[in-house]
Structure formats: structure tokens, C-alpha cells
Length: 103
Length: 138
Figure (cartoon, chains in turn cyan, red):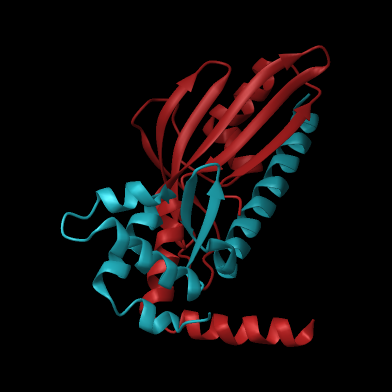
């Protein structure tokens, strides 16, 4: 099912989950541990909602289900990192030329 | 998605020469950018380059770790990077020269910044349009 990401982030629990996952990927239990007033079952339901809206990916790894933000969709971040990689490659080649010139 | 940049280069020169090239202000000015670097833990310095839209041309740095002649780390902050990232050079001697292992890491703050912007702004909407277009183009 596809859900509207705007509706997904309208809910404070779902926003809190996004904040947690912005720091690191976590399994469902680790996420549930962060909430005192929300049951594990409710957290699982909210995660499913976030997954349906394309904001979070959930992957099964053995018995655990890992959740992480769908960063692969954030193309702008990716393109920045590519720019930095290109910058450093160019500079490190320049370092090679510098060494050659000096020696 | 890669959250850090890793590059490996081999230079056909002894480790001391490569070390000097990455750890002195003059050498860094020649191949990287003009700077006021000093090899001193805690030293704060800048690299300066031509300003561009969205970037004042100043990279703010601080030496956080080094070991002569094998390791140098400093922070790197500027332009779209509102929070400090980390740049690390590691050198290793080989038969025919020196291997440089370069790493630029600590982009979490940068990535979060984008997430926040996407969530607060209309990024997701644009993204959905893009996604839909991608499916249609398949």
C-alpha cells in the first residue's frame, strides 16, 4: 500500500521514529525501547505506516527486522557526496603532480 | 548509499616526502588550497578558495589527531556542511613508494539536515513526482 508521506509525518510518534532513525539504523525492539508510553505493537504499526509511505525501509536480517531511513531516495545528498569525492580525487591527483615537481 | 568517502592512492615517493606534502602549510597551499595550517593538535585553521553560490569559499578546520609520518586528521566544515566532518590521511610505506588512504567521514549531520529539509519542506512531493516519472519512463 502507498501512503502519503505528508500524512506519515503528521503524527508525533512517527516523527519521533524518524528522528531516531536519522541517527542510526535500529531494530524494532530498540525503537520500542525509546518509548515509555507507546506499546511495541503500536510502534510496529507506525513503522509499517512509515514503510508504506516510502520514508523508512525495513529489512529482515535473521530474526531481527532492521529499520532505516530510505536515504537512497535522497538523491541530493548522494549527488553532494559524489561532488566531494570528485573534488578529493582531483586534489589527490594534484598532490601526485606536486610530489613529482618537487622531486 | 555510501556515507563516507574512501580513496586510495599510491605515490612513488618515500613516506617522509608524502608526509611533508600533507602536513605543511606551504605544500597544502600548492595542491589543496591556501591555508594557515599548523601541525598542532587543537589548532584551528581555514582553507580559502573562490566563493561560489551557497559557499563563502571558507572551509573551517581543526587538527584533531596526528602521528608523524603516518596519520593526520582534521575536521572540515563549510559550504553545505554546517556541522564538522572529518578528513583523515593515513600513510604506509611500500617497496615502491607510499600508499595514501584517504577518508572523509562524519556526514551524518549533513544527511540529517537534508532529511529535516525534506520533511519540513516540499522535498518529498518533488521526490514523489520524480519517482512516478521514473516508473513511467521504465
